[in-house]
Length: 217
Image 1 (cartoon, helix red, strand yellow):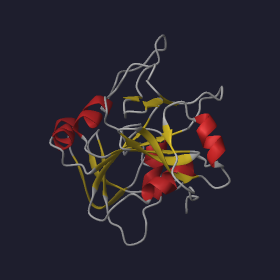
Image 2 (cartoon, rainbow, N blue to C red):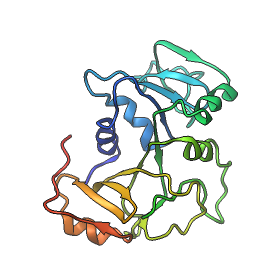
Image 3 (cartoon, rainbow, N blue to C red):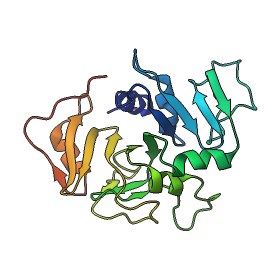
Image 4 (spheres, rainbow, N blue to C red):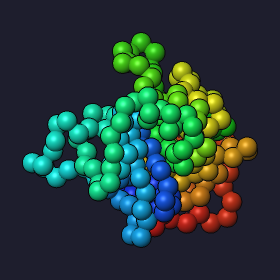
């Protein structure tokens, strides 16, 4: 199965030249480290950054330069800083071509739950609701199962929803899947992971057509 960096590396293959891309907290932030050769994108962070680069090397961190997840980041030439009102105007105005988010659960019809577990303290929803309500293209980076081995790709989410029918694609540690009107459609397998293993780990409706190729990383 893939580790977090493997998931990020596969998602980076979905980037297209000239796109503006928002990276959510967690695994999505790693995507900035794996931009394909020949592709130029502008990474946006909802706390007011446009033009984020990869994470800084150890010893060169600037504690004042952080992303929405409070991780230290670098800025590329031409990057700009602005207030959160301007940032959310970009998001709500649909000026971001791709949003990459983490998730605790995704349903077979594209609902996403990624902000709250009942009974556990949370700081708030943050920008997640604006992102899922405004974005046309949402890719979810997530683990396929929880620590107990239970599927996180479900017929229906059990946790409070962040957005409804909004997820377009999922890259997990086991597979790449499209979200269709008929359910999850299996596109690729992680290296060394069998189709049967993915079927067993997916609780929602799963469409498997023909021989499923392995991801190319």
